[in-house]
Image (tube, rainbow, N blue to C red; front, side):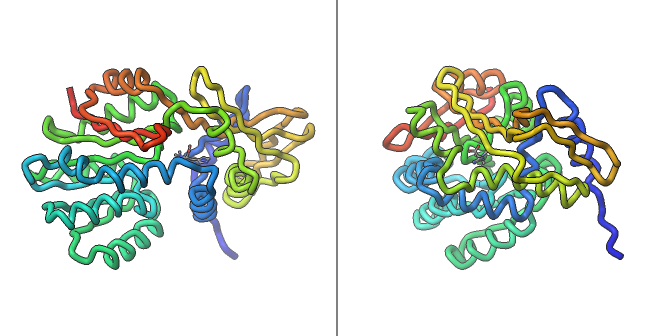
Amino acid sequence: MTVKTIDKQLLADVVQGLTCSPKYLESKYFYDDEGSRIFQQIMQMPEYYLTNCEYEIFDRKADEILDWFAPNKEPIDIIELGAGDGYKTRVLLEHFISKSADVRYLPVDISEEANRRLLSATKKALPELYIKPYTGDFFEVLSGLQVLNNRRKIFLFLGSSIGNFDKASAVKFFKHIGQFMSANDLLLVGFDLKKDPGIVLPAYDDPHGYTAAFNLNLLKRINRELDADFNLEDFKHYATYNPISGEAKSYLISLKAQKVNIGVTGQTLFFDLWEPIFMEISQKYDSEMIQSLARDSGFSVVHSVDDQKHYFRNSLWKKI
Ligand code: AVJ
């Protein structure tokens, strides 16, 4: 007999979200092994423009960015939060190494598997680079990382991951990061910008069905980990983009009135016909929003750089 260990936090959050009105699930739970694989597929589809935009910025502006990070060729530690496969950051690092920068790379990710892949790919591409991956929760890792060295620390939070937070949570997140930074340290953040809604929406409502699969995979995860009985055919993915607020949101819509059992607790959840579960926000930003987010979080914007189409921005912050 196999005894499964129940993730108590997942259980509490799922029950909380699905007994609420309106119902919601937390997008941080998308990334189990299968979810991470589907996200890789999302990043490779042409409709998901974000990855290529940030890649283009790093490819074309690496010189400028190195000059921001180490204007006097000082030693730097690059601490990447949520490094994933590290594909985009590698362009930057390659460039830095070719300029003989004194750089160390400390990627942090929740996924052990992602870190293993990142380590071997980086060692292959850049054998001369010092790399030390850390697995775990950002803030736990950062607490443990507070070693006394005098290298300048550059924190990276890329890919518009911050877009998954509402404003208040984003401010809280950045304030927390700020607690680990000294006055001379820097934070580089990736922001997806407001743009033609006809470009934004297909990134979250793609014809290949990857985004739908990504959302439905969370129901699958709940079935597996909490012994629930969601029938995936009874829910459909629905995405919206509001060009005023810049909010892209995705939902799973119940296609019938139905009951779902959570096996591990014996609870029954009720869904009305057409009842939505709010799954994810992917916020799009303008300059004012970025400024105000930085200010409210205790930072000021020191530099920023866009891709050529102005779809995406990397914004460099220092503590006020
Ligand atoms: C990883 C949060 C940047 O919101 O664009 C992609 C996640 N969700 N497609 C995003 C996601 C659906 C992605 N981030």
